Amino acid sequence: MPKAPKPGKRYDKYEPQKYDCISVDDAYLQEVTDRLIAIDFYWHTLSVRGRGLAYCGITLIPPDSLKVFADVVTDIPQLRELAELLKKAARESKWVIHFGI
Image (cartoon, rainbow, N blue to C red):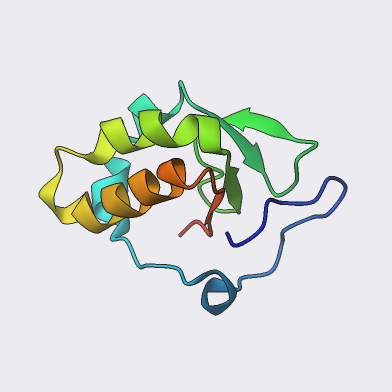
């Protein structure tokens, strides 16, 4: 995300072009969903903190969760592009948005 999410704002619209998103095959993410449950995320808004991805919704991934998320997906060759995006965002202290399935 070019800018951090704003408190009080809901992120409910599917806008991948706005955030320069990549496409990730859901089958590969399903392999690690049990490991993502330990990671802090926000679901749709900064006022709803959750663990794991809002699988059928929108997840806001804070900078302090990016390294752990990247560590989970790094060893999966099909998720290499995702791992690189997460690492880049972590280096730049950026948020990442996930639009679910």
